[in-house]
Length: 232
Ligand code: 13P
Image 1 (cartoon, rainbow, N blue to C red):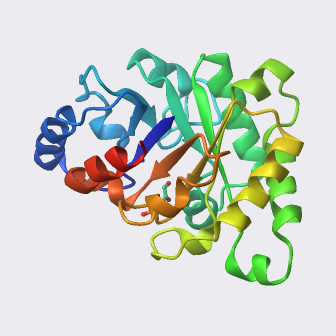
Image 2 (tube, helix red, strand yellow):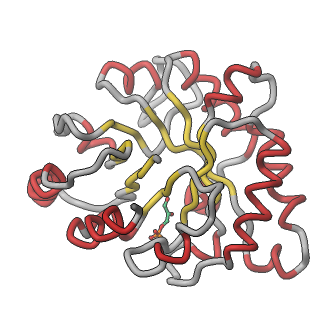
């Protein structure tokens, strides 16, 4: 299983140092991927943790002020990168076409993309879930080779579930996962959105979940430990 920790825009330098010490005490045989803010990436040297970023530039190195390229990430031992998070789609107006460019940059630099997809509550109420997910997946994976599609990690994060404490039913998650599998032969499909040490008892009943993308819980190491213990 993959447990990916999305710190989002949290933890200042000293806080992050303390956090890393705490994370060292997490014992697990699962693959732990830490996605800190860019500034904190170079501070990570925990051997039990793999490194991910929360974003990447659409471009190679060059005159793109404020951007961070995939090859720069690679030079900091980053092995994974979140792309297409709904917060970026909403606040930075990131499009599926840009996400496609980012995924290509990542593969060019041998970094595994963690592609986030998910619908709004409105879209779910209007029965548009499959349509939205198909559009996100089809455009984001355009022109990728079959091998690259297989290497993709996809995180299903219903937008109405992120940070709200509300999670879909197991049947809703299962249905979406089957749809994702029909469209893309990704190696891992993760669930993300208010996953925590309490609802993991329910979520772990879903056999097709290959792991989790954790936001709020990534910041609370004591609760994260309970979450990981309960996985087994
Ligand atoms: P929460 O776990 O805080 O709901 O966030 C999920 C998420 O957006 C992870 O990328």
